[in-house]
Length: 293
Image (cartoon, rainbow, N blue to C red):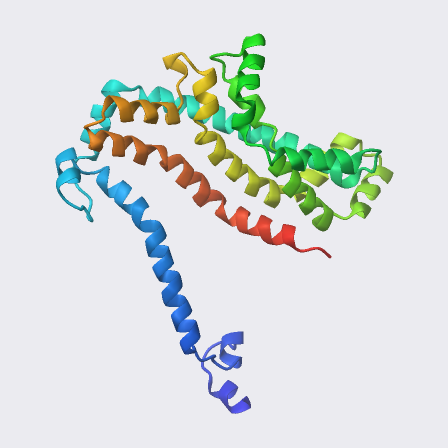
């Protein structure tokens, strides 16, 4: 090995020292299988994007695999029957507000469950976990009655406040804090005279960013795609969000598939941007939360 190191040109790295591993038949087949699964998973999404750039006639008569030239024509035609710009504005207001508010409230709740030992701690935490087992549709009637009694119909708060309380975020961030934030840091801050909120805002919350960011991205996607709750509390057209507009476009332009595909393609752009920006936080948060020292 010493002769190989001497003959190596340039700086010595771990790759130049370690022997090269041969890629076996099993590994090659695994790569082929993974590539095949990736193609199968991505193909419907690709077809949706490509169809958004073609006219309805092209979509109906042939299988399109390359982009067309009708994307902006489809969007302009869809805009005539639905106010897409206003819908995007409403969805962004609701999704961003609910995500930011949910991130702070969820992390604060997780901090209480993780670092404070009080009577009923475990029981309350199991109640939070149990709430994840019930679909939101079961409480839809009660949800509407509460919003109606509080005067929140056709109000952004009707969608922001319920989605700011995310049990899955509390559960995941609590597990992350248990493993990644030692109690000694909090005790040291208390001895230095930090208040409870100062400890959370200056120490605990910054250290929990990987897990909070990971769950916030998923929360943003959930709120962005929320159709049922938005349909119940938003009856005014000026308050319609993107999922409601998509649903209406499918009815108005039943025979205009180009317009329908155009609206659907536009609706996934914010999700793709958010996921592209925060995908590394999802991986870091999942890995850090799974390690317990």
